[in-house]
Length: 189
Image 1 (tube, rainbow, N blue to C red):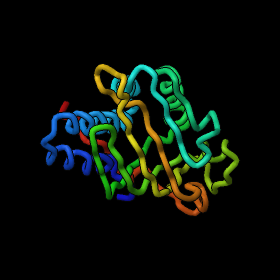
Image 2 (cartoon, rainbow, N blue to C red):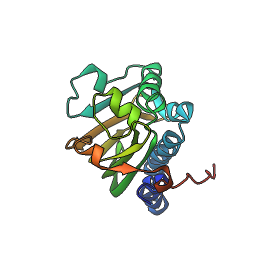
Image 3 (cartoon, helix red, strand yellow):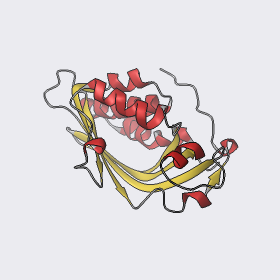
Image 4 (cartoon, rainbow, N blue to C red):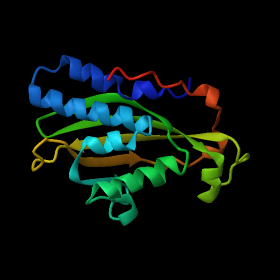
C-alpha cells in the first residue's frame, strides 16, 4: 500500500498509551480523536475536539487569509468542506516519525501523503494525464496542536501546519490507484 490512513494516528496512540500524566493524556486523546474523525470526514466529530474560537494556520503563506481560517467553528467547517469534501482529497496518511507533548500542545511530524483526484488537480490548473485518475502528493509536515488555555474543557485551539516543499511538484508523474489505499479500520469508540 502507498497510503495507509490508519497509520496516521498509530504513533499518537502509542504515545498516549505510554503517558501517565492526566493532562497530557487528555491532550493526546484530543489529537487522536481529531485525526481519526478527520480521515472519516466526520466534520462534526472534528469540531467537537476544538474550542469555540479555533484558528488554523498553514505555512508557508500563513498570512494569506485562505490559509489562515478561524475565529469560529463555522469557519473550520467551511475549511474542511472546501479542502476535503468538495475536492475529494480525503484519502491520506500522515506517516509520523515524531510526537511530542507538553501541558499546552502536541507536536507531530512526518510525511503527508494524499491522493488527489485528477479533476481537482485540473481545476487547480495542474495538468495531469487523466482527470479520472488519482495522483499522489507528498510533503514533509509538522503540526502544532495547541490547547486553548481559556477553554474550560481544554480543547484544541486549532492547528498550526508547517510544510516543506511543493506537494504538487511532479504530481502528474505519481498516479495512484484506489487499490493502493488501505481501507479505514472501524473505530473502537
